[in-house]
Image 1 (cartoon, rainbow, N blue to C red):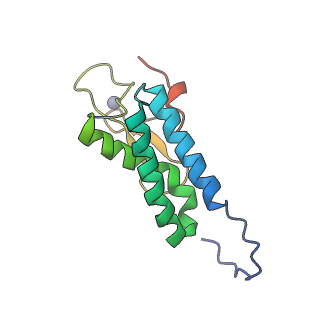
Image 2: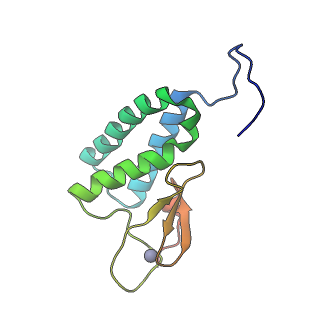
Image 3: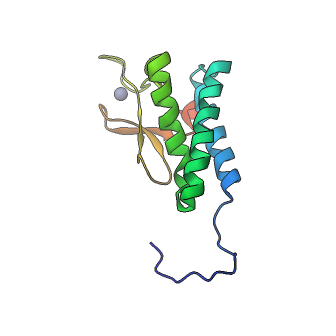
Length: 133
Ligand SMILES: [Zn+2]
């Protein structure tokens, strides 16, 4: 954490919340498109998460950088109830199909990780460019 005392002149270099929410939404939608599940009702799951996280980040603006990882996990949870595991691991060619997980769960620069193989597969928003096997 930055120990510097912040003035109260309203010039904090934080990313505007709407911009951060918009970016998180775009990243998760990109991953949904990459995995071909971006149907209308799935998109509404993203909207639900973004609406919920808008409230969350207004309470805690410092968390703006964590939004992409959080929205990704919200959508992953919602999809698990309605469709099943998402996104399926593209790295492991054998064994049971399993989903990637977001790491860190609450932090900046979130990535999709396979815990079985112990590899970072792609950044959240970058699944379309991930190597598939
Ligand atoms: Zn895997």
